[in-house]
Amino acid sequence: MDILEHLIDIYENDENVSADEVVSCYLKDNPDYKDIEKTELVEIRRAFFDYVNHQEEMSHETEIRERENGLHADYVSSVLPRERRRHHNKYIEAVISNISVTRSLDELYESYLEGNNVQLLINDINEGGYTNWTVPRWIKRGDIVLFMHAKTATPHLTKIRTEVRKTLDPDSAKAKDLEHAIGEQLEVHKKYGGKIFAIGRICGKPELVKDIDDTVYYGSRVFCDIDRLFLLEEPIDISEFNGFIKISALSAHTPVYGRNYEELKHIITDKNSVPDYFVYSYSTPFPHSKVNRENWMQLGQEYRNSFTLEIQFRQCYVNYLLSSIGDQKKIFMECDCYKEGNPITYVDNVIRINRKLLPVEVKLNKNLENNLEGQCRQYCNLRRLVLEKNPTRDASLNDVINDKVLVIDTYAVYLYDDNARKIKCIYDLSDLTSSDEIKKLRETILNRLW
Image (cartoon, rainbow, N blue to C red; front, side, top):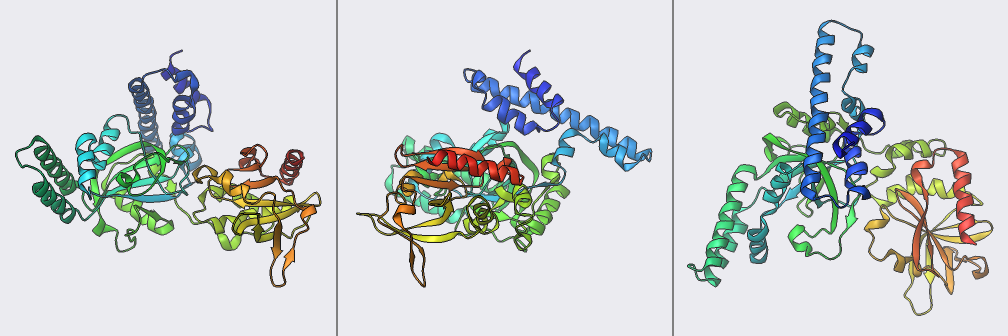
C-alpha cells in the first residue's frame, strides 16, 4: 500500500480522525516518511485533499437530492459528508493576522531575495496549501487564521524608495532590484491592501523559535503550522467589518470572538466559495460565569485550550484542579519566594499534598516559555516561603518539597526536578474526565515526588 492509499484508508475507517489530523499525525509527523522529499509530500497532501474534496462534492449532491425528495432530516444528516459532520458545531478561536508591508531598507532587501510576506503566503497556498506562520500564543489546533494585508503602505514604501535613491547609485544593479521590489509590493498592496484575502486552519501546536531575526515577522517568535489554506475569490475590505471589529494597532494579531466572528464569516461566505471546515466553525467565548465545582472538568474538556489569558485559566480550571488533588481545598496563591543570592520571586500557587507543601507554576503553553526551567529553579531550595500576607504566614521549611515544582499548562501536568534540571510531562489533561482520574493524577504526582 502506497502512502496516499494509506492516508485514505485511515480516513475512511476512523470516524474520529479528520482529514487535517490524518495529514498532521500520519504524514507530517510520521518518522517513516522523514526521508521523503518535501515536494513529494506536498503532492501527496494535495492528492489526499483532492480526494476528500471530491467525496465532499459527491455527498453534497446526495444531500441536495434527498432534501428535494423530502426525506427525514435525521436521514439527511446521516449522508452528510464526513468532514461536514465532524466540523459541525466545532468551537474554535479565530484571529486576523495583519501582514504589514516592508518598513525598512534591510527588510526590503530581504523581501527582494526571498519575496515579501504576502507573496510568500500566496506561494505556499499555490504549492500545497500549507505554511508555517507567526501566531498568538493562545492559538490551538483547529483554530482559524484570517490573513489580511495592512491598509497603509504608500508612506512606508515611499520613505524606503527615497532612502534607496539617496544611498545607492540609481544605475546600480542593487538599486534597480530594490526599486523592482518596491514596485512589486505596491502592486500586491493595490490588490490586497486593507483586505482579508486568505484563510487557513491551525494544524499543529505553536512553538517558540528563538534563533530568528524576528523584526521581519512583526516582532513575534511564536510560529505554528497552518494547513487547508485558500485564497478568497473576493477579498473582504476592512470597510465591511471595521464597524464591529477593530484591527489592533499594537499587534499583528486581532482575536475575533462570538457574534463578531459569525458576522465576519457570513460576509466572507456570502461572496466566496469556502471549505466546510470554515463554514461549520463556531467561535464562542468561555462561559466563565457558569464554572463551578460540579462542572469545571466537563467545561474544561470543551474549552481548556481556548483560554487567552493565564488568569482565566487559573480561575476557571487550575484552582479547581489543585483543590481536588491536594490534601485540602485551600490553595495558596502568589506566594513570595526568598532564595539565597536571588531577588524575591513569586510562585503562582502552593498546595499541601501528603502533608507537604509543593510549589505550582501555571502557564498557557509550556513550550512557549523562555527558560521555564530557570524560573522553576527559583522556587527550589528556598530560605523562606511566604504562604499568606495580612497577616504574614511563613511556611515551615521542613514541610516544603525543596527540589520539585509542579507545572500545569492547558495541555498537561509536568514536574520540574531541580536535581536533573528538567521538566517532564506526567499527565495529559485530555484524560481528566472523572473523579477516578483525579485520584490517578494525585497518585502519579506522589509517586514522582519521592
